Amino acid sequence: MERGPSGEYQVTVVGGERVQAFVPSRLPPQPALDLTGDRQLLLERAILALGRLDSITLLLPDPGLFLYAYVRREAILSSQIEGTQSSLSDLLLFELPEAPGAPLHEDVVEVSNYVRALEHGMGRLKNGFPLSNRLIREIHAELLSRGRGSQKLPGEFRRSQNWIGGTRPGNAHFVPPSPETVEPCMADLERFIHDESTPSSVLLKAALAHVQFETIHPFLDGNGRVGRLLIALLLHDGGALSQPLLYLSLYFKQHRGEYYRLLDLVRANGDWEAWLDFFLEGVETTANGAVYTARRLVEQFQGDEAKVQALGRGASSALRVLDALRERPLITLTEVRRRCGLTFPTATAGMQALEVLGIAREFTGRRRNRIFVYDRYLDILNEGTEPL
Image (cartoon, rainbow, N blue to C red):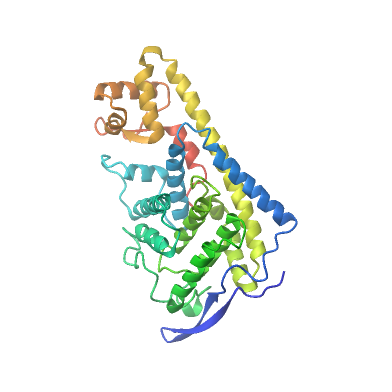
């Protein structure tokens, strides 16, 4: 389907240079999306995969545990796309207030900010606040609250020209709308998000809104991370998922070149269908992967619980310590005591039992302030989070 560019170029002057900034047209695309044939099948398969992901929470002993783990995995992956090199273990150590020597480098602060931003957005939606430009700015404020980017107008739309690729707007790969155009473009996007007439599926809305947000690039920093968060929040807010459990950062990370090529193709040729095919395949792949991960975690938990129960007399305290490790796969004995209400000797004995069974491991090598890790749990979560 021939559409032509999905917006228009406007000449603006930046640093004495005349630059062509791209201003996207309002959504939805005109003419309407072609949802016939194979694309309709892709849409149906993606919707079915989301349904399976939504129902998997019924199998989990505590869906909150899966959400806790998946949010942090997503924070690592989404931040990696922007160049950070933190690991999941780095983040979990950073989140332990009583863990001496926890990594304090800027990368882990940036990842921790992402967790805070996502949890802030989820909390606001849960309390009935609308998915709006105000909420997007609040999420951005959390994202840039500490570390790198904290001087780049956290929580505010940009007031200067940004660009993608190149050393200046004059030789950039792509120049988003001029700063005075950002506010009206974002207002149009907000109207589209809340327009219940088009498109009919929240999946389609999320696919289109993500591209539009990335094209507007409304902030001086953090646009990619906020744009990826927007997908998860839209699917949750739109009723496709009862919990925000779908995160496409791993898929985008694995297909970075194609992802950027298709964004350019939408802008240059209005080829929304090529982007939509890619997006729907990503949703299906990612949802199926999340279901597989959840099942593996359930099997791991059940297998380890059976090992502990076979201990006999010492099983009770060890099971409570195992519960604490399921909640926080990297933990101190102080935190175990706090979560389980155990005395220090009982918590220590329970953890020692798990060490003997090969379930838990102490990895600091210290005699005091020891930290224990649930290796098999972290191994499952770490798959795909290797640095780029």
